[in-house]
Length: 138
Image 1 (cartoon, rainbow, N blue to C red):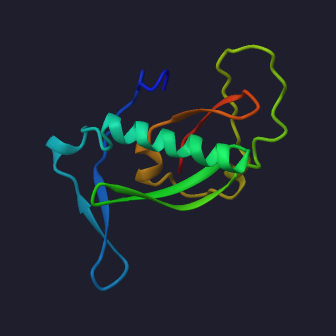
Image 2: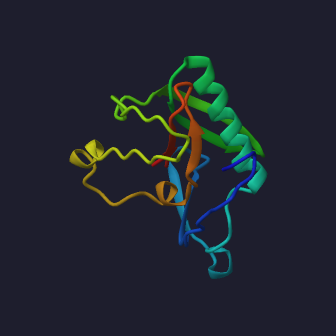
């Protein structure tokens, strides 16, 4: 993201979709080959999520780990909490982009990454403290 525009994106191959089942639980469906490499969220939806993320960060005063759902074209935020794994963030005195990576989750994450964690685009944010960071939701 830069100046309210998506400047780069990576669209991954998606071979499996998981849907809510009417009687509870989930159902898995193979995605047709012609749909596997399509962009899932529109650029406008990506920008909308970016605006929501900035708003929540401004409201709480810290970068947030945000979980969301998209149903019938409308986003709902189901959880927002401070990102504590990035702290302390090193001081920087420039306007350059900086990428901060947390690897602490690897100690508990023993299974393969779920498809949603692979397809959600990175979101560029600037914290109230002037830090830029990227969060890929898994």
